[in-house]
Image (cartoon, chains in turn green, blue):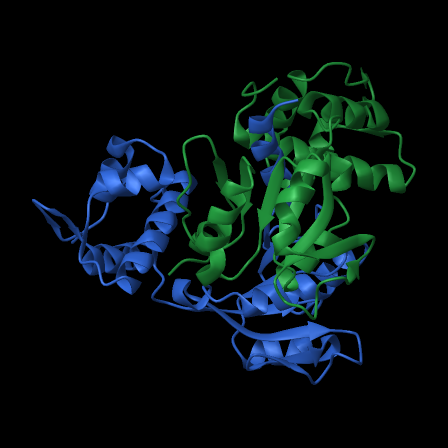
Length: 206
Length: 206
């Protein structure tokens, strides 16, 4: 499935998924494309086009079956093989992400946090322990970790990444506002909050 | 300038800006498009094309002047008129965003936080006070607030947004994994972390 859907479609499908989870909570069985479109303020035709890319969407004359459409999105986007991740940096952002109640539904399995602050090491966020960053290499190997979520302060980001790379982590989800230098076999996804803000800021105008 | 650049260009320009800030810290005067391209693992031609959209980039035979290029990005993207914002929800994510050291550089001025937890009300994050959510309407008006950054738990999100809408907030940056129902004159920007993760997750494969 890799690369089949453009990023914009994936993004919309996860928003549809949010809406469907809401409908399930409210015990609603069916939903129409125009309802989804209305909630997201996008075109009905866009929603229908996106959903037409999926299989087994439970479409009938009265709309889509909420459960079937939800399952279809999950199957199509590959939530089914969970990825194990470490959070690097147990500050507010690391804590927030460790507490984020939706990652597991989407196949992201945060296994543990790491920090170099002795006051934090040994504590737990939910059921996730905060370990000493020095223990990362052996734990990454043992726990089959594929991804590091980087939430350390900007000034510590590059050194931390160098350490992650040495520890054989190949995928880094970077929340630091810093462009990181990595070898070619390592992928970085920059969670560019300023960029996101500026896109929104445009709507408010100068 | 509204709507002039596509989101993808804005996103890349903010990443170039990150790199330039780094260069300024290291007292480096010039940078080439191929250096920027190498750091971001994108095409040199893409970088040159993006920069060609800007004015006064300080281009010379040895590369771009770091300071001029940085200023040009800031002017073009309109960082110059700061927008005042409240953070709604003083949990880990709200705290993390209040502490985020880069928003101010990009024209986002977080003025205060709001919560309904009496243990939090009255405390400060940096110089930003946490107020009782009930005081929001009068403070929004008094402090000329244009945007609310929503970091409340998913189950509280819609009720909170209804309250923000009543308080005449027109722009909502939503960090809750929940699609919000708002009137037509209110804009919501969904910070869709699951969507972002899934885009990245594709690279790791099934």
